[in-house]
Each structure stands twice: as C-alpha cells, then as structure tokens.
Figure 1 (cartoon, protein in one colour):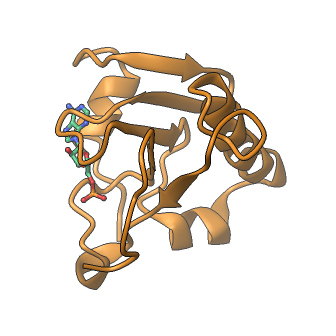
Figure 2: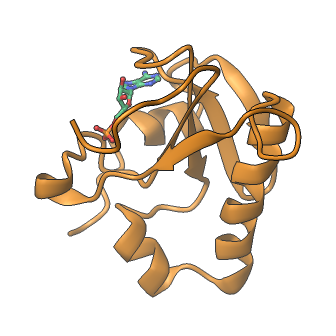
Length: 121
Ligand code: AMP
C-alpha cells in the first residue's frame, strides 16, 4: 500500500493540523487522541512515512525502529504510566482492514491511567 501524504497524521506532522502534543524528538511525535477511549489515551507515531507496523518493520532503518520503541517508553514515563513510574498501560497498533486501522500512518495507541480491561472486546 502506497503512503498517502494527505492522511491526518501526515498533516499533523507537517503542522497543518494542530495536536495536543505530549512529546517529540527526532524519531517520533506523541499527542493525545482526539477521541479518548480511556482516562489516558495518547498516540505515538514515527516521523517517517510508514503506513503500518508491517511497512515499518520491512522498511524502516534500525535507528527509526529503536527510536520508536524507546520513544514509547519515554512517553509512558512522561505520563507516569510506565511499569517503573506507574501502574502500567497497553500499547496497541491496528494494522490494515481486519486490524481496524483507520488512519494509514503507523501509530501506537497508549492506554493507561486506569485498568484497561479485556484485550479484545
Ligand atoms: P486507528 O483506528 O488505530 O487507525 O486509530 C486512529 C485514531 O486516531 C483514533 O483513535 C482517532 O480518535 C484518532 N484521531 C483521528 N484524528 C485525530 C486527530 N486529528 N488528533 C488526534 N487523534 C486523532
């Protein structure tokens, strides 16, 4: 699947649409989900143009892969939901049609601040 430069997260990365930023570095941007499903619900996205996790795993550089994984941990620590700073959280990435992915730019949802409950409803 070709990357769509007009997807909403691409527009956020370009600064064309605002977001409520949590954290940003060379590799990632993190911001609050516009339609939170839990007490804390943020998104973590890579700055590179990747449609989903499979595209990322196939095509991203080692630095980008490390940057995203470490970035998730940094964001979780900043929000005090990480294993060492809080009570834990759920990191989830929807991939493609059957995975329920709506925005075609790789993103991880981080849910926390309360018990997240069943893994699949
Ligand atoms: P997914 O179904 O995994 O593709 O999730 C897409 C997520 O993006 C949903 O949870 C939406 O609420 C969220 N979302 C869509 N537009 C925005 C936006 N402009 N700012 C923040 N979150 C958004």
